[in-house]
Image (cartoon, rainbow, N blue to C red; front, side, top):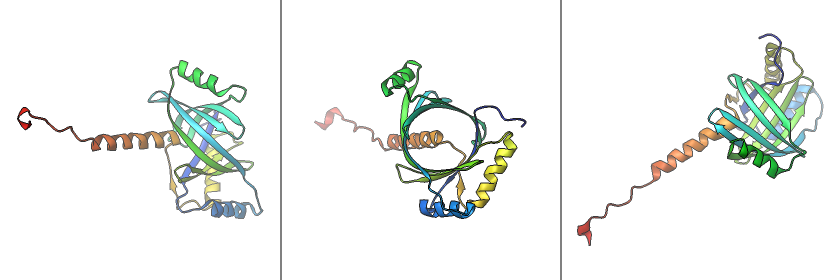
Length: 201
């Protein structure tokens, strides 16, 4: 790929598994050789869909609100991502705008995030409200996709993440799939009503 398009995002996502936030923090400090204090953000992401291939994320947290539209390009490593700052608009107006545009709210994702911003990579560790934790490496300040991949590969090695499970799905895909699986289990548990025959009374 030649020069990268505008509004592109290149990142790796991992399930943190047994790697705690404190241990991850230590790995980051060891990698850069100094003490660091991460940026701490608590956020709520509301996901809205208009069809199965079209969704918007409405994020509230860190003193700002934004609408995000994403489109996959290469698995879930390279994505087109457009963020619109909506902080000057009130919540009810944003929700009404989405509903009038044909979007329906599907679910919300709450998380705590600890973020380290470096010159060429944003490194974050976040914990979802269900207790699962995720690590993300996002390349910044690059020109070509190949350059961005090299950046996050470098940080993957620096932080010794090779034993963690890489996740190719976005949070939207993860929660959509899990929601579908739960609904299927519930439908399987529905017991047919008993048949009442006239001769039973």
